[in-house]
Every structure is written in C-alpha cells, then in structure tokens.
Image 1 (cartoon, rainbow, N blue to C red):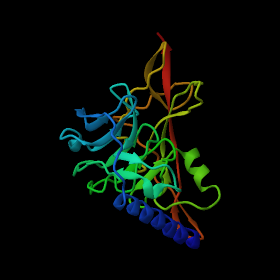
Image 2: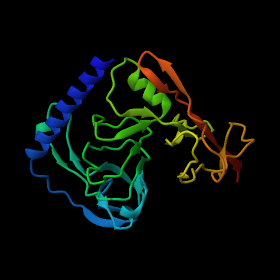
Image 3: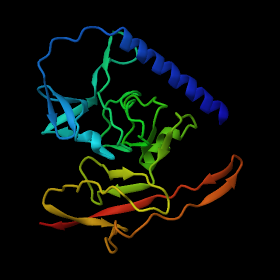
Length: 260
C-alpha cells in the first residue's frame, strides 16, 4: 500500500510538472468573442454557448462555503479558468489560465458538476479544507486539496488499489429519491465531522411537476432531518494492520416530493 501511495505521488507530480510546462509554453489564444462580467459570487467569461469562471467577486470572497454552479445565467459552466488542452498528446500546445480566486474565508467548495479544474485553482485560498465533487474531475491529479466524491464514485476509482492521495468518500449523501432519465442518484454530497451538525444546507432540488418537501432520513420520508438539532453519528474507530482507523459511516438523506 505504501509503495502504491508513493507511486501515486510520483505520477501526480509528473503530470503537474507537464501542466506547468504547458502553462509556461502556452500558445496565443485564438481570437474568440467573449464578455467578462460579474455574476453573483463570480467573475465570468461568457462565450456563445458556454462560460468560464475567471475569479470571485468581493461578495464571493466572503463566503465560507462556495458553490460552483453547473450553469450561470442559463449558460453551461465549462471550467475554472481558461482551458485549452486537447489531451496528453498535445498538452504542450495548450493554454491554461488559472482563475483569480483569492479568499481568506472559503473553507469548503461544492461543485455541482465535474467541470475542468486544475491543481492551482485555489492556491490563494489558505483556509480551504475540502472540495466536494459529484463525479471524477477530468484532470484529477491534484495533491493540493482534499477532494471528496460520492461513496460509489470513490469505490470505483480505488477498486484496483491505485489512487491519488487526498481522495475520500463523502460521509453525507443527498439523494434525488426518484427515477431520473439521466440515471443520477446523488443530488449533493458533503462531509462533516462525525458527531457534528450539518452546517451547509444545499440549494433545493427541482423536479418538474413536483414540489420539494425537505430532506428525510429514509426513502419513505417518515422522519425529516432537522438541521438545527440532528447530528451525524459519533466517530467509530477500529484497529487493523495499519493501526487505528476511523470507520466510514454514510449519512443518507432523501428528498421528499409532492405532486404540484
């Protein structure tokens, strides 16, 4: 296991080095029409059919919890910063501009979808502790931050025993609680200390023809989760070959829907 982790460090370092070379040897960006403007928490670069988050506003820099949305003003968010990389073969011919995110306040970042993000996207956020992502990030080689995935996603990337360090299964899962056309089960994930309250309440999900009725402890929606009083299970530990280890416990919350 230790050998695999060291190998992961070396491999991650190699890829990051290549990315830095890419950044240093970038080519001039093609002439494309775009507009930069503030939109809520972010400074956004809008193109015709997608946008890129180029930084945070003064408002965004005050947040403890920063939500990176899938859409801004109805336009799909493609990446954090400007990205023009066509894959490993032509990475050297790409161009990369890191977003200007400088916040002393942000402690946790929530990604609504797996957008393109690079190791140094939050290099000026000294108090950032965790990044939540619902799916594997396209360039998941950063060893700079703790990144949390849904339990089943985490299991899929660690199934062969080879994985990057600082990757963990989130211990709070919010489920759509109905059959979706896209097959998605998870609406949101989070990770908090065992025995603590959930501090961040996610934005309400939307379902056509239905009204959202809160988060419940079981699929049948009998007992609602009270964010004011309910806490996660207490920490449990076990002794194994590697010493004392915290036992993973997943708190599952389910959306209640009523026909509107």
